[in-house]
Length: 167
Image 1 (cartoon, helix red, strand yellow):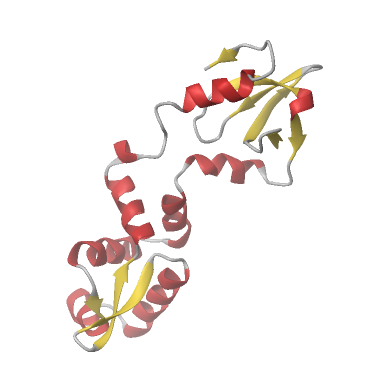
Image 2 (cartoon, rainbow, N blue to C red):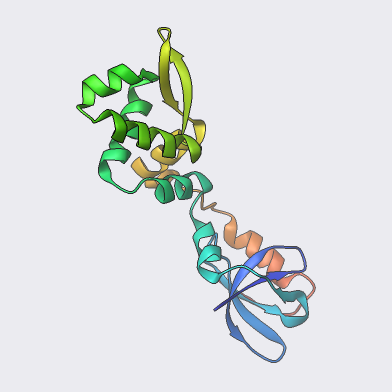
């Protein structure tokens, strides 16, 4: 499998190469279609990275940064309870200070938490990216797949060609 892009810059996964047209899959919608080869070019991106683009950016950030249920629970609690001070986190959740510091540092670096002031002390709150990701995970029906994705792909795939779109 290989990552390719068409002449509009849209990226696809190359499934089958033929003489005049290639079968490609849109990683965001999952739809497959044929696109003329003269409209495609290879892209220096790993196919699995391209495939991952079907997942919203916020969810990808969360999934790649959170490696255990404890850390996920920390984000869920911070999102539900609002900004919390470090002392409150240490007392309420019975966590080791160095472990908490490590988790907070990683989550802040990944853009899921931001430092804030809570009653004159250092605290943390979830970012909009984190809240969006947690909402998407809690309610999968709020995902990013748009209902008109197949129409967009059909328009892109057949523009300037006699090829048929096969959703």
